[in-house]
Length: 210
Image 1 (cartoon, helix red, strand yellow):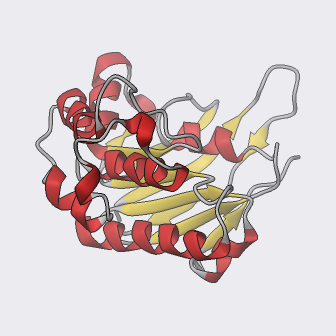
Image 2 (tube, rainbow, N blue to C red; image 1 turned 180 degrees about the horizontal axis):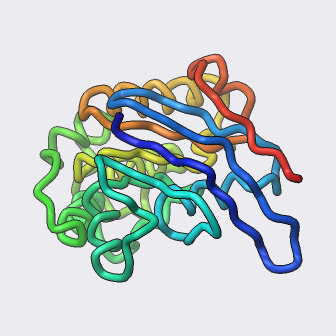
Image 3 (cartoon, one colour; image 1 turned 45 degrees about the vertical axis):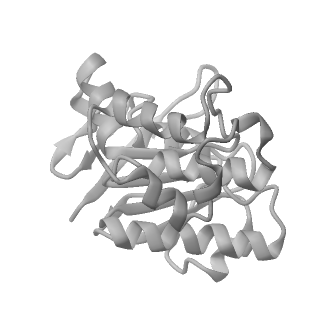
């Protein structure tokens, strides 16, 4: 198996402990993490990506225990092997589209995918030298997806990627993420409260507040 999380538990100060369902994924497999706003979905995403340390349990990716890693070693592993699509693009305004992706190569110290080819696949070939400030909301999101994919990660995580999209673009984004995950042999986890996504990804777990 490529990715697994077991017995994860986390408590925010002053709140009851969150206990999360176990996850096991093979290369190219997709999973939805569903739950209402405030249920702990983003907390789970942060635990799975090594951005938070759990009180109990472990997370493993490609045989490496993320929960045991620290500091620079964890940052480098995340840069190489985990691609995160955040709810807002968080692109670097001083860099053009291609330079934003080159920065991901630099920080991950990994050659990864061919940037020009990836941008072409995502319908952004003509935007390579464009300022990110000139992009539409949909284009900026696709650049954010490209940045998450460019290092050829083993785990792709997307946080509410369809929350501001209509039905047609929701389908396009989910299809794009699934296709790329299969292409590079990555596991895909989509964290969302958008029930429309269930039509495109049948495998899901639900996060509920205690």
